[in-house]
Image (cartoon, rainbow, N blue to C red; front, top):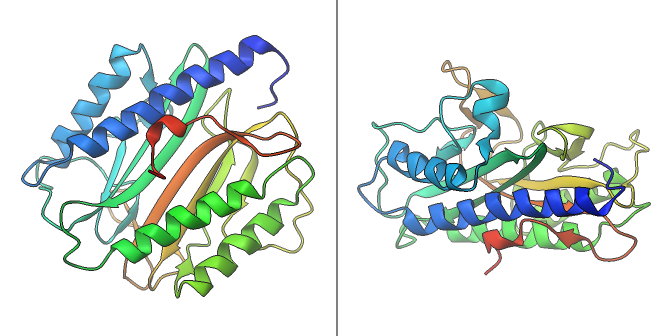
Length: 254
């Protein structure tokens, strides 16, 4: 979405603060022994309290208010009473929603309790790479260059990237142009970030896999070669200098 007037910026700031706050509170609420369904319903209540509507639920009929992916699930995990959180689990929560005609998207991976399986280095790599990528975005920068930066930084950390999941434009709907802000460089992509547009930038950093494949439930994605995937995502406003992080209320970098 291209921001052309103050009311649009206010609308984007408001929904971004809502999804960011929801993500933060869900992360803090997650406890050992809780089901992912309970965690999701808690998030759903927060969205409702703001008058916001869950984007995956509204847009795609997703069976939950947020995507909650556990351990080997890479993305789009379905909240379930049967999935019980355990100590050391690698959890990803992705929250996107609509309010007053504006849409925003954010997500983050974290380790629940003690890091008994040594997932933290993967989590940290994803967080740090996202921060570095965003710091390098401004109007005129090639989208492919940011993809190159993400993949290069992942390799430096000893990890890979998922190549078929991507960041995207966001604002008047959940997914807009530019559609594929990928985690690697496509040299033929000449597209550039445009000043005053809102985009969701997300990292998908993995231990083994480079492609996400869908399970039989029609939603859940896992890595094609197994292992683990972490994701961190912020919705930003592109400027001619440092971007404005609209979803910073999620505190994923704290």
